[in-house]
Image 1 (cartoon, rainbow, N blue to C red):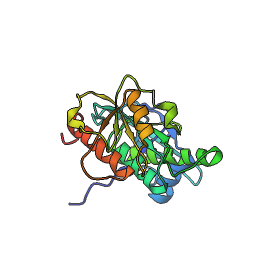
Image 2: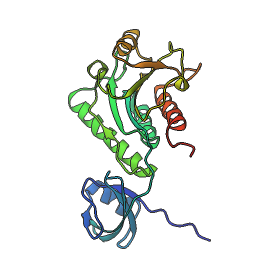
Image 3: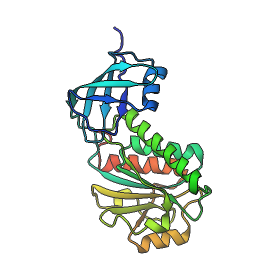
Image 4: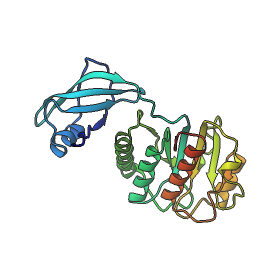
Amino acid sequence: MSRRAHVPRVFVDAPLAAGATVELPEAKRHHLATVLRLKAGAPVTLFNGDGNEYAARIDHTDRKHMTLAVEARHSPRRESPLSITLYQAIARGDRMDFALAKAVELGVTAIRPVFTERSKVKLDGERLARKQAHWQAVVESAAEQSGRLIRPTLESATDLSRCIAKDTDRLRLMLAPTATGGLQSVTATDRIALLIGPESGLSDHEIDTAATAGWQAVTLGPRILRTETAGMAALAALQSLWGDLGG
């Protein structure tokens, strides 16, 4: 028996409804038509962040345009009951891409890239704008690949000191080697902010400042994790303890 062909998922920033026609932007047209070599009539799954998926088919495609006909709306239950905002210290190159993609796969709601005192990445102006656009593409692609029904919000990169007092309505957790308690020592909640430091870790000053602002230090265990591994491990643990990972 042959396996069922994979149906690509595409995020579109537009209203969707059965009977509507959607024209894809060039980058997504290129991916479907040139990379995947899809033709008119091929099925595509669309989502726009409203919590639904939409079955569609390619109605027309040429070298410059692709339109899809939306056929039906479906409402799968695939989003975690946890609302998690990830404060991710900005890492170099592929490490940051990896951290963002895995955070999306593991169900975060929003991501706030932060510069920290020990950050080794320096970005500003046009370089930062290009990097922000690249990160947005990483987040969107990961949402498409992992079956998310939303595209997690990617906020503008900023210094940690400027946002450490935000999200006061959430349980705010930071990974710190000096912490004495783990996640199981924390009272369960469905609204969480999680702070992950850079490769060299958060400075003592940052840990003290965050603690004064109401952040709780926690540890994942005795081993030292890379910044891109720490976020993934913490999110997996949170989803296992309080969310939907593992059923």
